[in-house]
Structures are given as structure tokens and as C-alpha cells.
Length: 303
Image 1 (cartoon, rainbow, N blue to C red):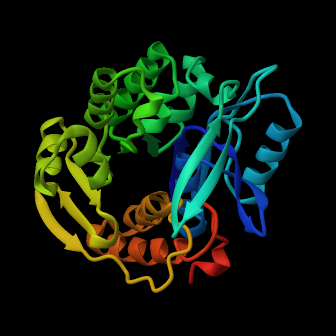
Image 2 (image 1 turned 180 degrees about the vertical axis):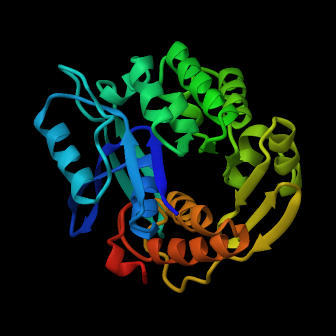
């Protein structure tokens, strides 16, 4: 079995800690990280493509070459004159990260401004993945365009996956954030939230409350990540729990959830066994948080 997996969002220039006051340059972003781990773990019969917009600068060229070297398709990427990728820097304390961003001129904010190109990419794919960050960086009308296309894809039988990945400072207001994230879930076949986000920003007092809310919006499948407390799955009404893998030395939690999502989807699309796929994803995420940076090389993932 094979197919085409399309991830939609923003990839940025990443500056991460390299020790002795030095910084290491890389490329990362939530939906690109998920594509990276999906590609690392998927069978060769699957194609993995990234949909975004980039500029015409040298850093955009370097980023595209990086995607292609990783085996991630770039054929749908839009290029915009005068624009450039965004940039962020990771600061770490006791393995926990905080971020500083420079993204005002990011081309990715215009990724949905060409509706025909967006529709063509989605129609050419079997699985579509996007996030709350994808929606948050877009102008309101472009976010509505993306949501219309994901609803259309779901109605056509495509497997649409949404991680709310809630970042309030990217949104103009809480009302807009709540409404748009709810619409993202409504257009999806699987929602993959993190419980701490949902508790903090939607007021959910339990994992069960988060599951009920997203299923009421029309998402038939929900997988809730809860850090060291494991993952709870509700697929077509069947609930199960998968514990997290124990990690002795947490180095960097950047991309823990993204790596879980990508590795989970790689196995689920192959086996349709959600529980076994979550166990596999927990092992991959444990490896990832034992290393620096968002993207961990395949040879360090134990594959």
C-alpha cells in the first residue's frame, strides 16, 4: 500500500543551542517536522510532500534543497518575489524550550493566497495534514480558503489530520482562535491535540472533556498527547491508552509532539492499528527528546 502524504504549513530557519554560546542553523516548523518524521518512518511506497510558500532569496533555495535531500517533495511549493522564510531561535532551560521569532516577511503567510494551487496539491494527495499554527499565520480570508479545501477533502474521502497546536500570541483574539481551531477540527478525520494546550486555552478539565468536544465537532477520531502521562486515543468511539516511554535524560523537548504525530501516521496509514501505532510513536518521541533540535537524523531513531 502507498499513497501521497501532504503536509501544509510554515518551515522556518531554526537557530538552536550548540554549546559554548554557539548556535546551530537548521530548518524546522511544526508541520515540516511532522513531514520529516513521517518520511523517516514511512514505507518507500508513500510520497511525502510539503506545501508552503517561500521567497526568491538564497535561504529559500537552501531550504528547498534541504527538503529534497530529506526525500520530501517540493513540487507544490509557491515562490514569491521579495519574500523570505521566517526565523526562530530556541532557548533551553532544564530541557524545556522557549522561542523567539522573526517572521514578519515570511512568505509562508501567503501559502493559501493561490486557491487553485492549494486545491491541486490537496486533490493530488491521499492524506492531508495541517495545524493550528498553519491557520494562525494566514490572513483571515486565506485561512477560510484552506478550511474550505480541507472540508472538501474530507467530504471526498481523504484522510485529513489536524493538530490544533495552540499558540495564542499568533492569533488576533481568543474568539478568532477558538472559532478557527474548532473549524479546523470540524474539517478533519483525525484531531491530534496536546492536553495541556486544550486545558489552558479551551478550559477542558479532563482528557474526556477534550475528546467529547472534538467528537461533537465532527472529528471521528481523536488522539490526545499528554507528555510524560502518555496518549489517550478515541477512534470511532473506541477508547484506549498508551503510556509514554521513559526517558532518562531529557535534552530538548522541541518537536516531541510533531515527531509523535509523524511517526504515528506513518504506521497507522500502513496498519490501521491505532494502538500499535501510538506505541511506535511514543518510542520515536522518546528518542527525539534525547537529542538537540527539532529534527533528529534517522540513524538516531532506532529504525
